[in-house]
Length: 316
Image (tube, rainbow, N blue to C red; front, side, top):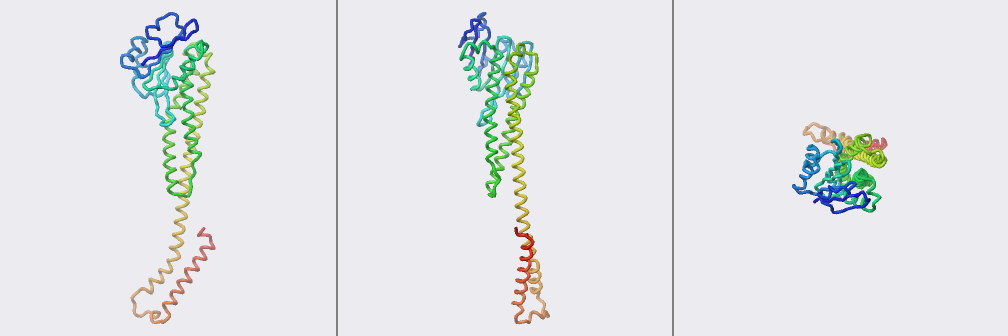
């Protein structure tokens, strides 16, 4: 489906235009949106607009890394749209020309609809031209990154390594899932940040000077998002290290307790081993109270070692 809006030299908006209407000399600039286009509509990129073959090829092959390419007076952008819940990335291709903007995408884009609706609110918006329309599209796309990053950040802040082994193991699974989601976001946000940096520091686009403040604002948002992601990744690393340290301390405590118990039973096992031998000439075997004496000796040794270890604080 193709949707076209145009802004006339009489400072009026025209909607529901067709491709043939774009030849009118009354148009100051126009916006053509290819939303899940059919094959014959896709061919218009070449047959009507005569865009560069490499740019057209990038439109057909998903999923490209966010980037900007300059072809004479037409500038080609690959942008990413991120769904908040699933973090599914949809590619938005944007062509920026001297008097037009063309967007191309295979999935419905609420952000493009919002940008178009904002443009059509008043004729004054149209006076700002296609560079402002491109800004609105990029701004709406970047604004949708914030909820996804904030949600992951909030999940991390709610996490705490506790004494419940099952709960801790579940938290570790959640932490690794969050790290994976952060990595997916990073693959979009960092290239978008680099794209805006190149855009704001390039003189290839005519008339960009008066809109630099707007694009710098998007770049600042992307810088903030990058810092938030780096902070969240550090939090996941800290939580992971805390979990490993917590498990190591627990294991050390368990091994210390088992070692103390084993140490107490070593002399007792030694005595039991001696009197468990089947020699006939052991004088103690003939004592009538020998059994009780050995038991008492073993109790005294065991209790003495327990008291000594406890005084050393080995049971804490």
